[in-house]
Length: 194
Image 1 (cartoon, one colour):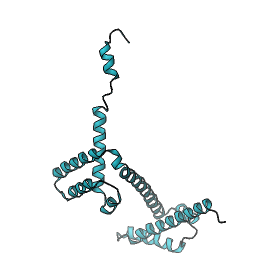
Image 2: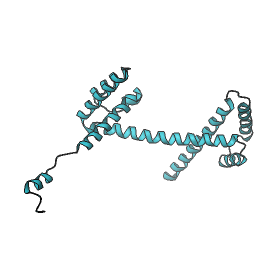
Image 3: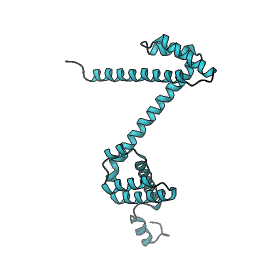
């Protein structure tokens, strides 16, 4: 102990005062964020979460409010109600929302990859077409080339992008069938036949 510090000050330093105000504010904002996510959640998905009944009622009340300020005030009240229940009451909901957010990120990334591939196909990139045919040998090459030509003419003629959308749907079907076959192969590796 340094000579400049008194015995009382050392005793005060050793006393546990709980979380700091900053930490309390972070926790309150996290609950407010969770409350906002619950309000925006689809009713069918919300029903699957095991939430206290009074919280579900307040979520329904908050959804009915259209005024911005009133909705903000009601959301703050919902967060206050949720803090009364404690963290353990919402652990499952947090886990579910976190998993869905990760799944949504993966789906968005896959969608962007397909859109980029479609753009490369339309830019007359022969290597993109040959790479696609190499990756998916089951693709109907003639139909794909026909869709590419139609999409290019739609762009040039400023027409509705029907073939453009069909290319995306075709690429999505190929990617889905590929992921299904990979899942079946992984399942076969894990569970070999007797």
